[in-house]
Length: 154
Image: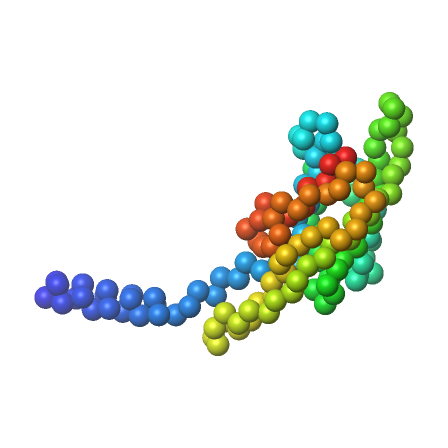
């Protein structure tokens, strides 16, 4: 009788295995890590403002940060980020304004009829930039699992 009961429980639990996983890791959030140009270590930066094309929002930072999470425009093949930030040049603090335009491909993937579709942004590349050192793409797919997609050295 115990084996019969255990068999029924295993049969019921295995029915759950036929359902697809609806875990979606797609996102339109770009993860940016800020690095020191000389050492490659994390660099704290205070941004006066950050503007993102495709949005009316201006992002502000009250504290110095070593990383940013900013949205890309899901309806466009490119997004431009304009940064105004403080830095030190020849031992003098100055305000700088730089920008980077990223290009990417957008793919709609149907996971299953019960899960629906997800929008993936892949093939991330630097299209244009005004930074002295060109930002480096470290992960070309936007994903909730990515720790960083773009590395900017200041």
